[in-house]
Amino acid sequence: MGTWKFGEMYNTGQPGTITISRSGVVRMSDFPYNNCPYEAKVTSTANGKSRLNVGTSKLVGPNPGYCYTTVDPSFYVLNGSGIRHNVGPASGDGYYYKRA
Image 1 (tube, one colour):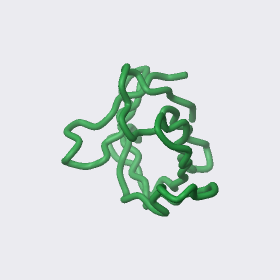
Image 2 (spheres, helix red, strand yellow):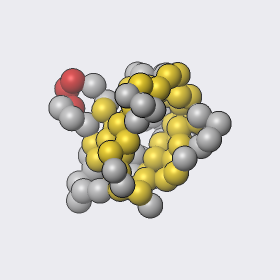
Image 3 (spheres, helix red, strand yellow):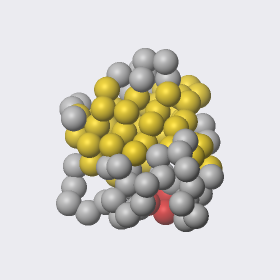
Image 4 (cartoon, one colour):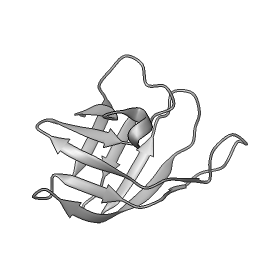
């Protein structure tokens, strides 16, 4: 499906790159302050497949001691040439990524 890069200047604690494969695997990597890559699976779609619901993300690399082993389920909304990652109500509308 594609790869997206974070579209803003500051990206505190969020992945710099999101890649979604045709098999439904979502990979989050290039975190600015740590090296904690995560993978999740698309669990369902909505809104004409523009919303991708993903399950719990799991750490897929060595844990340097400060990475969570899992991250709560979330969703992505495809929006024109970008994608928005909604990580929950505490983050408002989430984080916006532009197609790489």
